[in-house]
Amino acid sequence: MRTLRHAFARLVWTMTGYRHVSQPLPPDGAGLLIGATHTSNWDFILMLGITWELDLETRWLGKHQLFRRPFGPLMRALGGIPVDRRSPHGLVSDIVGRIRSGERFYLVVTPEGTRGRSEYWKSGFYRIAMEAGLPVTLGYVDSERRTTGLGPTLRLTGDVAADMNKVREFYAGKLGYRPDLTTEPRLRDETGTPSASA
Image 1 (cartoon, rainbow, N blue to C red):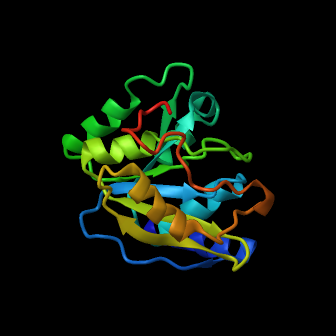
Image 2 (image 1 turned 90 degrees about the vertical axis):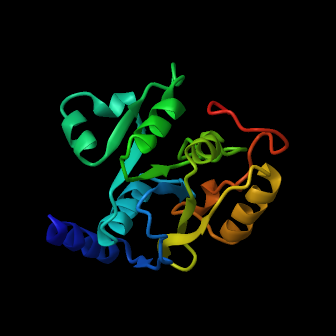
C-alpha cells in the first residue's frame, strides 16, 4: 500500500506540474492540517499526494452526500468523516473525543468551506485545535510558483487575532489553484472565542 501511495503521489506531480515542498512535522503524529486555499477539486488530489508521499494517517471532513452509494465506502477508506451541514452540532466533540481516546491522525480541514470565493474562513478548526490541544499545520497551494505542501506548524494561543495574523503572514502571496477564487484567511470574529459553526 505504501508503494502504491507513493506511486500515486508521483503521478499527481506529473499530471499537475506541481512540486511538493513540505516542512518537517512535529513527531507526535496528530494535528490539524489546513488545506488552503480551497478553490478547486484538484485541491483534494494535491492533498492526497502530499499526505500519501509523507505517509501520514489522515481524516477529512466531507458533506454527507459524498458518502452515499456507490462512492461512500471509497470516501471512508480515504479517511472521510461525513458531516451533515444542516446539523453540525457535536462534530467538534466527536473529533476531540477521538483524539482523547488515543486515535492518532491528522485532520485535514478546509476552513473556507467552499471552493468559491468567500469573505471569511470558518472557525471550527480553531475550536477543535484549542479543545483537543492539537497543533495546526498550514497546508498550501501556490499556483504562481506551482508548489504545494505543508508549511509551518503553529500552537494556537487563544489570542485569535494574533494567531490569525501568523496564518495570514504565511498565506500572503499564495494563490489557489484558481487564483481568482483565493480567500484571505480571516475569521468573522477575531476578538472572542470561535464557535464551531462560525
